[in-house]
Image 1 (tube, rainbow, N blue to C red):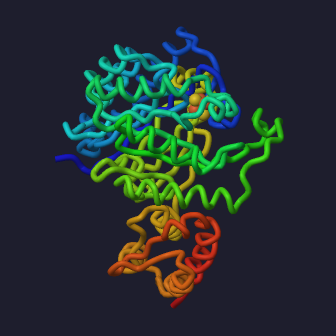
Image 2: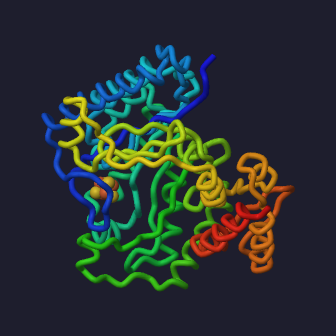
Image 3: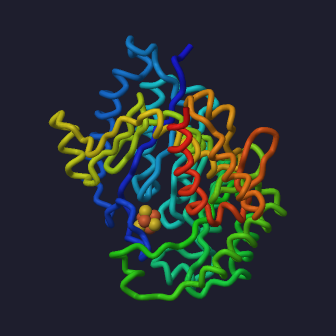
Length: 392
Ligand code: SF4
């Protein structure tokens, strides 16, 4: 029996081309030799970490990795053979139950049917596909290189290759996008047979080509209307909202991502990957070459590390828990973090009057309207958290 469970994240920072809005850490261009070096570094780093946490670790008795998430960047560009090696390594180094969720992110322009079959055979059982929109004009305005037809082929092909659990990303608040277009995209991907949908609002990040173009987005009220209308449509299609940006058919919620929002343990590998393990949160260098060199030479690849105090954990419990439809429990909060929930509850009661949150049994959760203004709600609540901690 394993000590406990963790999620493993592997970051693949390669993309065919940078999209016009993206400020994630990834490099444009598919250089096979560099990918091989990166793969070697990932495998070595995993072996070293598994010596302390994996199934042969005498120290811990071995953690069980019940989720693996290969994200990016564009993992489908990394190639099925390399991904297969990563999945095999995780399976051989950590206890991994047969029911483990193994997700890979993909873009429609870099995932063909044969690769999907190989990936499915290797154990990948969930795909998260970057569709963003189904209208060619919107895709072009984002600098995406795939077409709506490629996206349709990709999702339909994934189903034929044996994937039952398929998520797509869509975006709202795009320049020139209307609610009708969003509805069309949602209905289309539903038709393709997806089981999970992530809906993100476009943010213009400094330094991106989109910021330089000075485009005008739908105003705040229109974006709010788009978000709420989409949440309503998804609900009517059977996709329950379980997090601010995430919707799923029953039993298709992302188990890996839920670990982030419920303060589960996870270990990340690769440049710019983050971990929360053993009471520490740490991140790796945001540089592929520095990561490869660091792993090779045995130098630290950790760029930032912080010990999370119980009071900070209490804040995270509120902040992350209220991102989810499951919400937070006052009893749990007080029992685990030994701080009063009273001040937070008082504020939640105030927000309840405006329809921003609801209480079900003894748990509090935000409504879709509350999700929209969650940043404002959370910053008010976090002030109360400090008050609560200081209360006698
Ligand atoms: S594919 Fe994804 S990670 Fe790569 S540039 Fe586009 S948005 Fe960024």
